[in-house]
Structure formats: structure tokens, C-alpha cells
Image (cartoon, rainbow, N blue to C red; front, side):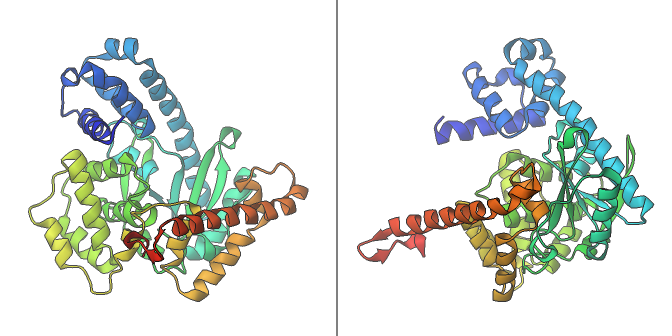
Amino acid sequence: MTITQENARIGDLCRLILGTVDPQDIAETAWPQVVQLALRERLGPLLSWQLGQAGLTTWRDEHYPVLVNTMRRAATYWLVMESVRQSVEKTLADGQIPVLWLKGIALAQTVYPQASLRPMGDVDALVAPEQFRTALQLIAQATGQPVASLTDSAAMHAVMMLGPGQRIKLELHHSLLDTPISRLSADANWFMGQGQWFSTRNGGLYTLKPEIHLIYLAAHAILQHGEADFRLLRYLDLHQVITQSPDFDWQIVLDNSADLGWTYAVERALSISQALFATPLPDGLLAKLQARRRFDEDVSIAVRKQQGGNRWDVTANRFASMSWPARLQIALGLAIPPRAYMRWRYQIDAGWKVPFYYPYRWLDVAGEVLKTVGKLMGRRSGGKWDADAR
């Protein structure tokens, strides 16, 4: 598929999953690429559901049974993920630790037509930093599963594999966007106070207010992952929050984006969402975000992350937003992670094998660094650096 063809198919897919185009108006020759794109972007369940809503269930089942299969798998997986979420919530409630649910696990139940139509790879939750270690201990005691984490200062969350067969990944955050010692990190306690309870089929769920969730989702897409790590689902989430939240207050978005220093991230994410999904935005909103931008807002973080790169490039971009003491502290944590983290990261089946994986990790990192050096050297031309290498 050429870039032009892919852009056209992305447009078709966006309209199809929103139900703003008649599926029969999509060219027959375009459907294989549309379905392939939907599966790649994890939007197969939503596309399948929309085809059913359009009365094309028989056509869908005959021509693209893979869509039905992915919809069924997503429904089953959702039930398991939600059972894990409820179990974790009960454990923390018994320990009197408030928990705020983030991204997919919350959005699925609040802004999507059916929870299973919003696929996700993990369950994200936030607790107050001062309760983070206690929360991990409570969950570990209740489930019997180990905690995989770098040191608290070197990681914004810990990972636990829960549920049947330990297939569900829980990411318990005590910081957002990056580690607590990064300039990019946000005040977790402030976000904990920006939640509200939503009524769902499974009871109550505490998550961010729609306006604050929008700001966080935009920062997550633009500042944490960057545009180079493009996922259609991230911008669909923004569209859904805006269009499915009654009484959405844009003034809250403007004020808090400015206070957090995220006006560029919000502006950029909303621009992309509008281009993809025709997301309705108030007249002049993007200009107002620009006008509220503080002189000390670091736009360079987002710009660097537009370029992508290998794992070392990603790490180098993270380091650019940190002081030298913070860089050294995190570098040490990345070089010599705790044993539990090593066992999870490399799927090590016996504890005695762990020490042998540290040299493997160091060689792997060295290889990534060499790739970056080789890439930079390849950009040299006549003894001068090319403009895009500066």
C-alpha cells in the first residue's frame, strides 16, 4: 500500500468506525486494506460492530470472518480484564487506598457504545505516591504474584501479571508520563483529586473528569509516546471523550492545559483528532491554547518525539527532559534493575539464571547505542552534519 492509499484507507476506516459513512459506499477493492488496517490499529471489534449496526452482519461474516473472531476474543478478554480490575479495586479498598482508573479500562465503560469495543493491552491505575508501595504489597499478598518494577524514582509504574494464566498486565502508577524525577512528570496527587465517580454496569468506577482525562490523553499521546509512535486508537479516545461527555467544559481544558504546561500537546493532539475524525472543536480553541502557552513550556520534548528511532533514541529523548543527577540515577536503575523486574522482562523461569541476563541486557543496550551512532555517522556529508541531524 502506498502512502496515498494508506491515507485514503485511514479516512475510510475512521468514517466507518464512527458510523458516518454507509459501508456500501466504500469501494469493494478497498475493503481488504480497510480490514487489514483495522486489525493493525486494534479497531477490528469496533468496525465489526458498526457493520452489524448497518445491517451487514451476513456480508461481514461471509467476507471477513476475522472481524467476528476478533470481536469475540475482545469480548472474552474484556470480561477477564474487568474481573482483574474489580479484584484489585476491592483489595485496595479493603486497605483504604483510593485508586483512580486511567485510559482504556475507564474509557471503555464511559465513552464507548460497548466496553469490549475498546481493546486494550493492560489495565492502568493511579494511586497516591505515598501509598504506592503499600498498594503493591496488598495486591501481591492477595494474588500471590510478584511485582516487576524498576526503582520508584526510575519508573512511573510497577507491573503485575494477574488473572487466569497471569495474562492480564496491571500497570499501577505513582507518576504520570514519566518518572517522578523527570521534568515531564505530573503531580500524581493533583490528578488523584481530579476524579469523579461514574455509574457503570459493574457498579461505580472512579476515573478522571472528562476534561482532565482529555488533557492527560493528549499529553500521553504527544509527550509520552510521541507522534512517531502513532496509534489511531489514542486519537479516537479523544474524539469519544469530547462527543460522549455531556456538558463538556472547554474552559477547564484551557485553564488546566496552561497550568500544567501542556498547551502544545493538547493543541497538537486535538488537531490530529480533528483531521482524522472531524472532531468538533469550538471556534478559536486552538488559537486560544497557543495564546495561553507559557514562556517556559518545553515544546522541544514533543518535537523530538516526532522523529522516533530505536530504543536508545527513546531513552535519550527521555534523558533530555531531566537534570544530570536524574539522568545518572535513572541510568543506574536501567542498567541494574531489580531481580523481579529482570525475571518479568526476560521471562526467566529460575532465579539462579538472573545474573547471567545482566550481561545480555548490557550488550543489548550497547547494540542500540551503536545503531544510533551508525545512523548519525551515516548523515555526515562532506564533513558537515545534515540539517536534520542537528
